[in-house]
Length: 150
Image (tube, rainbow, N blue to C red; front, side, top):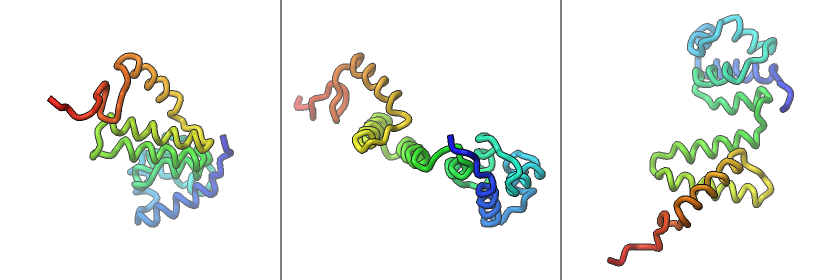
């Protein structure tokens, strides 16, 4: 894990708070943390937990992953992967099976390019179990050889 760069994090939080036109007290209230604690984070004197960063991100309506990167909890490559996965999973225009297929394709491309994904091990276990239980899958669905010709 990278070392925490809380000075950079504090400056970034202050900038985001000002952009949102929130006082320190307003942000502290919205995030559920104390005003002095948030002030210490902004001044680089405290190292907030991932949970506190998530609360602050929610209050500022920004990505928690961005704050994790700024705090050194998550590297940028991991953040990009998590955000990509989150966007796919949150898309209401595709069904769950399509989401899983997209994630598998995404993971296979990353692996092919030498980038292992966080969910690859879990996904490959689930895929092997699903295939063994349900039979082979095609683009049209489990065991479906194509359009119904009846």
